[in-house]
Image 1 (cartoon, protein in one colour):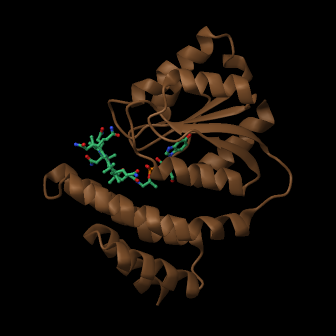
Image 2 (cartoon, helix red, strand yellow; image 1 turned 30 degrees about the vertical axis):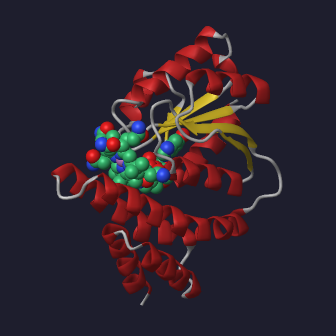
Length: 216
Ligand code: HCB
């Protein structure tokens, strides 16, 4: 039953049927499916298929837009549920997060921000297409212990390195741990640019953020 709803949800994202995605997300919640399972087993597989179809030329930009909208609207229903289930009382630390300059992909970054916040982190979400100097200013102003840099394009992942270099040049690199992520990013890339960690998804980002906080 739950599996059937999740499969239909995946298809609704692939087909760009926003109304169905909203209705099926509600149905899954009602059936007692955990919000994180709805994301990872319902919505994300749909986005991955959309990405593959875009690469193969079967889908075009409007398909990405509508699939993104379906996922975002479903996420709006899930965010309060995620927070309610995981809210911790004490502050785990302060995090500045954003999608780097030139990149407007926001769904994954927002999911990481939601999960960090649900796990007790104080999160300052700078949004998307964030200029490198804004990351620098906000890290200094807020006194954040962590900065999360999201990049979904091979052309923008290099901006993660620019931010690390800017932190270095400003003499604040040792004050903040840098956590990188996004579809084209991996551990090897994170190591090569001197990031403190790489997380492949929001749950891994929370675990890593907690570990890095323990180290700082
Ligand atoms: Co976009 N796009 N897109 N896109 N897009 C991708 C990313 C491609 C891989 C699709 C493909 O070709 N297969 C591709 C990138 C290719 C590449 O560079 N290697 C691509 C392209 C090419 C483009 C445009 C250039 C298309 C064009 O205009 N011709 C354009 C770029 C615009 C720009 O940014 N300047 C573009 C635009 C769009 C939108 C706007 C239509 C839309 C985004 C809507 C929005 O966010 N509001 C969009 C979408 C939806 C996608 C796909 C289909 C899904 C992305 C997504 O939301 N995934 C994506 C294909 C794909 O990735 N499968 C495709 C779901 C989330 C939950 O996963 O990976 O973002 P996530 O985040 C994870 C994870 O990476 C990690 O945790 C998250 C949560 O689990 N994580 C972090 C992310 N950030 C982190 C930071 C941390 O500190 C730690 C962990």
